[in-house]
Image 1 (cartoon, one colour):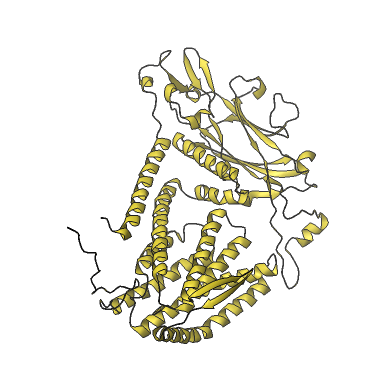
Image 2: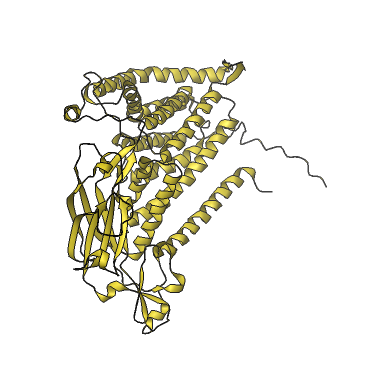
Length: 545
């Protein structure tokens, strides 16, 4: 019979290996497209190959039009905002133009951009070999609440907005302007196999028959991942013109297919109810990161997820079997619960992505459950009003509690002045949306800046008891792996400075834990965290002949 304890871990590791292998295979299929083998034999009619029209080196022109209609058939009711003659698909450029905003768009309407790639000297409506793509230049999002100084009531934009004030309901989405438009053209002279054309690229392709062979016209692509929330601008009713930055760069076939899949994934998230801000968090992962580093990040994140699961599993198992708080710092458990709940409320107040908010909420619930176990708390319901009862502590547990209280007494002399001073400083110098926002930010800054100090009582208890056998070392080990992974990306991935420093503070405490484990080797005769002694042989049922 397989050991019960390792079965779940083995299953998790096995599923993880299958997941990574499957993902690698899928990614290889995306970035590597099989070319048409018949193309190597001088192309003849009916060989099934689809050749690039760009290989004929045509003279092209890029035109960008705006209109309030999602479909256009003629040049009526359109505005030309950018015209690039003698367009070179190999040359990168960026230009900023001013776009007239129609009255319909100013009244929460939509404005579309039509991008045409056509032969030079010919209007796109008269060119049978033109390609075009459409993209909305506006999106709807709930405006961010204005931040003010809570003592003086002054805001940064009060004087500017006093002249042209426009009120919005904070819970109603309003029209925002996308100030960037990023264009790409696939420039590889790649010959596709007509019988196995990739579905992702096929919807962007337009084929024409030239003589006996079939050609595909230039593949024009709009990089929607580059549309970030930070580039959005609220459209006021008094606004008549807005800036639009049009940038162009060539793109390879492999990156094009990868980008198409990523955009489809972001679109699926939005269909499932993710807001523009939620989707922006995912976009930032791809846009702000090098493609090769992104692949490395994926594998590291996958291992991070595995270690998270194993740490979660062992932590739950440890506390589920925990019946005594001997050697465990109750104050440290209470602090972890408090800090986790505060971070969750902070993320909720900042309207953080659901990708971050949901795991933080689950962690807060688990920490509350740990507090219930640590305090031996039982909840009894008398109608709608609950009553809380606490269990009794043994003499050994009371001894541990005395060490814990002594450590907190010394720690409070340093911690409380620092937290209060930081809260007063932020109140005087930083603007917030409300008093609640200031309170939550003050708490979370205290957690990030000085939270590691609350790990010290457990070190003090270990020192007094000369033992570390009571700690959940399996969960600690998996969390340590994740901490070191966080260290690698702390100065690479975009994150608040306070959170970045918090990644390194945990390393110091964990190294002290390791030193204590070396200093106080586990006594084999002591009862471990599962209530078992290493010297005791487990009782087995007699074997039936």
